[in-house]
Each structure stands twice: as structure tokens, then as C-alpha cells.
Amino acid sequence: MSARRRAAVPAVTRTLVVLGGALTTLLMASCGRAPEIMLVQTSIAVPPAPTPPVAAGDTLTIGTAAVDTTGGWLPDGILLSPFDTANPILSQLDPALLSAVQDAARAAEADGVELSVASGWRSKGFQQRLFDDAVASYGSVEVAAQFVATPEVSKHVTGQAVDIGPPEADRWLIANGNRFGLCQIYANEIWHFERAVDAQGNCPPLRPNAAG
Image (cartoon, rainbow, N blue to C red; front, side):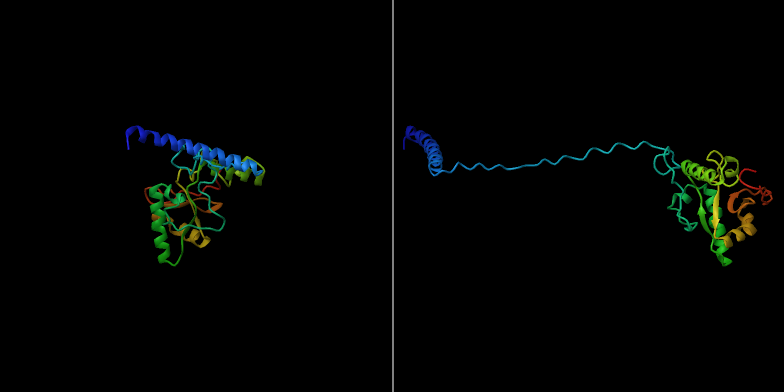
């Protein structure tokens, strides 16, 4: 086959294709049928919006420091083992205080007493919420301050205080706590302990309450 004849073949093929398509359209029209057109719906997956970066906050908080009102919260009736250091209630305590509580817990266990933690470190926001609740309950700031310290003075916020439970453990720690440097601080809170012994291992006189 000559080059000229080979070049003519594609042209003839294209012509036949065009004629074939036109003939099909004419035949369908003559039969009263319009050519069918298929519409295909497509979708585009939109990627999720990027997560905004979280600003670094106070290391002694859970979440954003300005709005953290739950850091240090435990449900009513729940006590922690002093060795549950995965919980920030304990991990954010002053290391010397945590060690003293753990030593006391071991000694109490040897005496048949289970010593647990009811509260430890608290965020500023959570302490403020506790104080606000106390004001609402007692009707004045002055009375509320006898039972709940403000965030500015609370030793819980700085990780320097723990509340111990149950009552049997409180009584044991009141009698034996000075061996570990732990003292009851307020006469109206038998559960609240801080490291407060003097050089001779004696606890200071009890204060009447958190305001006194």
C-alpha cells in the first residue's frame, strides 16, 4: 500500500464515524425518540479545616488556664490512692509533699488504715469556683472564707496541701503525721494537711479556720 493510500484510510474512518453518529441520531428521531444524554453526578471531598494551634498555658492547669474550672476536681465520694500519680491532682503536688503523703500511707497501711487523697492540686479557676459556691451557700464572702480559701492564698493551687480521707485516716494522720512532716492546719478541717513541722518536728498551733 502506498503512503498516499495509507494516509487516506484515517480520513475515511473519521468520515464513517461522523456519518454513523448522524445516521443514529436521524433514526432515533424518526422513531419519535430523542437521543439519550446521561448526566453523571460527581462529588469533591473537602478536606477538614486545619486545627488551630493551642497556645501554651500555665503548666499547673488542665486546658487553657484562663477558663480551667475543673482542674483538680474529683466526683463526690471518690478517693485517690496516693500512688496514682497519673492524675494531676497528685502529679502537680509539691514533690516533697507527695513523698510525705506516700510514706504516711505506707505506715498507715501497716497499722491497718487505708489512707487516701480526697483533694490535692487545684487549678486557680476551680478554686475560684469553689469559693464562689461557698459564697452562694453561706451568704457572704467573710463566712465563705472560713471554709474555702481564695485562689490567691489557697495552698491547693500551689500544690502545697492535700485533703485526706476517710475520717479514720484523718484521725491516724493527726496522731502520726508529724513523723512525716504533715500537720493538720485548721481546727474545722480535720482532712486538710500541709508540710508544716518546725525543726523539732512539732506542728504549729491549729488555726480556727481558713480565714483565721
